[in-house]
Length: 458
Image (cartoon, rainbow, N blue to C red; front, side):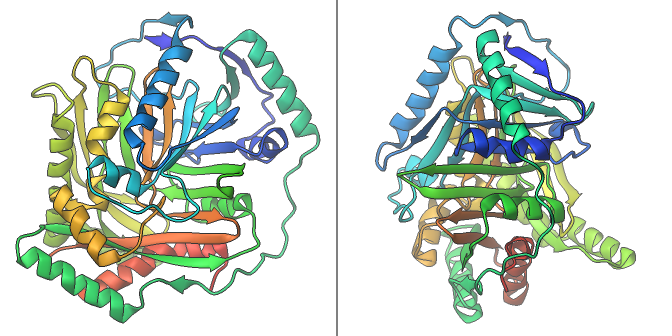
């Protein structure tokens, strides 16, 4: 079933960036789930909106938090009119029809695996915004549409947007503020020692693949919206996003992402999709060299083996909540190219069992195997001993849980979390027995490059 909600087209001379600048006039808690006008099937729509409520998870109550999200969606959905959705022959992309928007930290997922984990200071396990007003950007037609749960709410939302747009304008180009020097948690020697420790654990049979990560921090006076606009212009992605929260719990916090990895999607027909990424090569300005790098990634035995291990893990995670024989590999080892990197991507699909919903799928799959390694439980335990610090929002996920039961979540990679003037950037890579230390260190720097540039941090 598809919910029927009130909608109205906005003037054709408006664009998403204008709406984005108007949102903080309406609320300090706002978001942009941004497909950045990508011309692909899974990037037809972007969503912008404001929250009427911010909900934070409490440590030790992760399962209860998921139940709260589920119950709120169920209660709000009652009484709303609906129509039958058409069943297609291909995966039908989910849609956000109001509901929850936010993020889950990596440690939230670790706790779901019944493994003890310390949360990052000044950060909650998860943060979700309740959204009953939004703007939908249709990248096929260019149309912007305001949506709300009722005609009365829609009228109020239109008035708020009109008033906010009257007092805002696109900022003029100005000199970029300089951030402080970036500080790496691990220097090259320390990170190389951790790579060796991963390979020792693999040799001893404790894991097959370990996704080792580290973190970069930098102080800055720039606003989250400034950094995000710079990032989306320099490193666009089909699952980019900006989520801003200002309250007594987090202070001033922004998740800023140009994520290329779609973690979990669930449509109105209970069809699930995940698109794990494992395998990275840099881009080159020289077209011949760029093609060589692409082909090197496409035919790398090491990268294909790494990717395949994660695909098998995700198939297993899906099998716990999907119908027997519905889980299949839709794509295997396809190269996707972005402004700074080539990525090796696969896709797994399945159909949820009767009685299961988006949050059951989430609980079965989180944290994502592409950010843990395999086997998942053992990999998490090994990495906690090696990394010696919580990952926070990095390696977690962000996106929406719709009133319709649909879901679209992206991995928090190629992202930074800006909280109270301190930027946190996570980066890392999958370690196997055949990993070369120098190449792995270069990969961590490559993945942080676009983020540090957007931050203007040396």
